[in-house]
Amino acid sequence: MNTINEIKSLAATKGITLTKIAQYLTEHSGKNYSIDSLSKKLRADTVRYSEVKLIAEALDMELVFKDKE
Image (cartoon, rainbow, N blue to C red):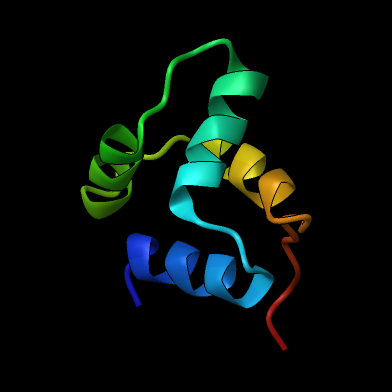
């Protein structure tokens, strides 16, 4: 699954739109995010780790790295 579909799937599960995520990013990053700019970054896989952390926060989730089993 690519980045945009993964984020859309998680957002749908949480009942949050990409527009709300873009607003959250704008409010918490000091940068301006529109739905178009966020979608482009997700489609092109050019989203930064700091942005992914904020997206996780917007979804009330956390990023976890764990060893493979």
